[in-house]
Image (tube, rainbow, N blue to C red):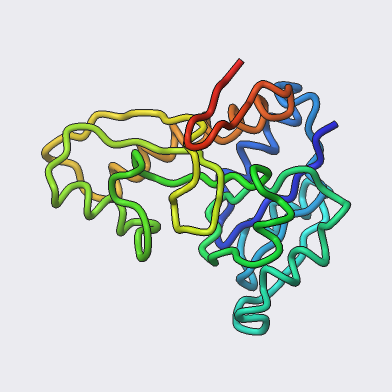
Length: 203
């Protein structure tokens, strides 16, 4: 059984997709041990409560640069994989060392486009539309010391229309996020993901 901690900062729709996967049996080998939020009063914590999952608030305003250490204290020896599902704080320090190749993130663009510092939420889609790209999408990748620089596990693509608003593009990509993140968790739970440098082999 793959025990996971899902880290969130907002509504938790990607968390919801993982919960649905566990409920349906698609993620039959996965247990969500914790939902951890760095922001108070977010709906993701309600989702956890509604599904009898332990939800924990580690407020980034309180813990600041010690947030990663607090997360490590909580989950060390308790979980196998950390899943960032719309988590806006940057992880650092011993947590990254101890969970190397055991932290994954979903990003709402095709990395290496429109990623890195300041590239989160609706801003990503605004930048994609400003640039005039014809396709965009989402990326599930491992988390390392950089921002959105870890090895790519999988990507999903959507077409971009010239008339798209940032919100329209965001909603279309979000549908793909809800497919991609559970798929990556499933592959890892089945032992089908192998990392060699920047390359990730599936199968």
